[in-house]
Amino acid sequence: HNVPGLGWLNLEASMEQFSDTIAGQTRLDVEGDNLDQFVQNFRGMRHWCGFPRVVLKGPAVLVESFEEGQLASKYIEPFRRYRDYQLQQAEEKARKAAASSNRHKTAASSSSSSSP
Image (cartoon, rainbow, N blue to C red):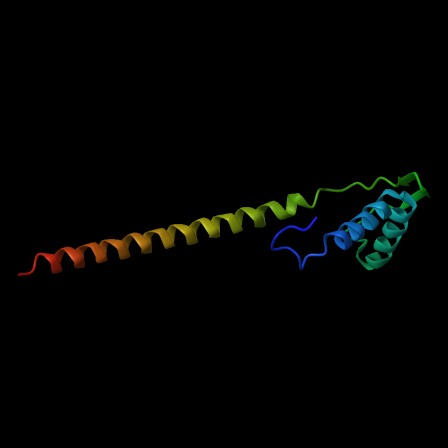
């Protein structure tokens, strides 16, 4: 049952914790309680950020209000594109620096080998 090199990792306890977490999420009344708490935590921000309200909850059912809105991804995507652009620029700069360094090393080694 042991995986070599992973003895420090308590897989049994990790799986038990994961199972408890997943089981809690399959109880829709618990998810409804979590949503109620979430709405409460952000109650002062309702003017710019709304969340659905719990209409009905039970162990096997959760009915939420419909909230008109826009996906958060609409606002996140421009930042993601900018980050990707910055990473691309940094990678290009690093490639150019490495190529320049290699050219200098090659030039230096060929000039030293051609010296008498």
